[in-house]
Length: 150
Image 1 (cartoon, rainbow, N blue to C red):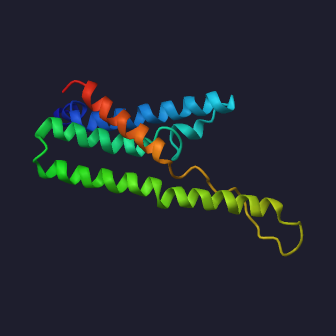
Image 2: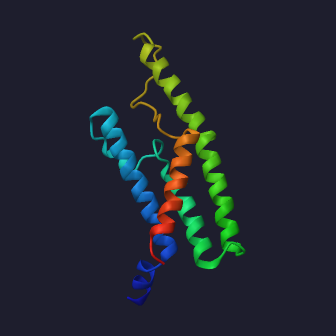
Image 3: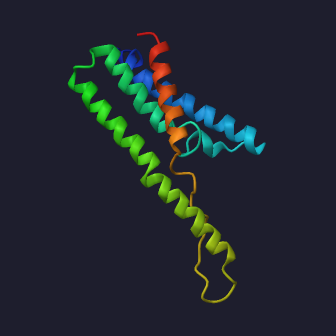
C-alpha cells in the first residue's frame, strides 16, 4: 500500500500525467469548438492542438529539473527524449498524416470496379503536429510543471 501512496505522490509522474491529460482535454475542446461536434477519439488520439506528446515530455523534463536539478543524468535523458519526441511529431508523424490525407482522397475518387483497392477504414490523418501545436504543448507542459506543487 505504501508503494501505491508513494506513486500517487510522485511529483514528476504527476506533472507528466497532468500535462498529458490537460492537453488531451484542450485538444478535445478545440475540436468541439471548431467542428461543433464532440469527437471522443480526441481524448486519446494523436495530432491536434496542443500536442499532448510535447506537453508530457516537457512537463516531465521541467519537473525533473525542479526535483533533482539541471546537472542530473535524469534531466539529460528527459531533455533528449523531449527533443526526439517533438522532432518526430513535427517530422515523421506529420508527414505520415499528410500522406494519409492524400491516400484517403485518392481512394475516395477511385472508380467502382473490380480492380478497386479494398479498404475497410480511412487512414488516420491526425498523427503529427505543426510547429505551433508542438510549441503550445511544450509551453503547456512547462506551465503545469511550474504550477503543480512539489
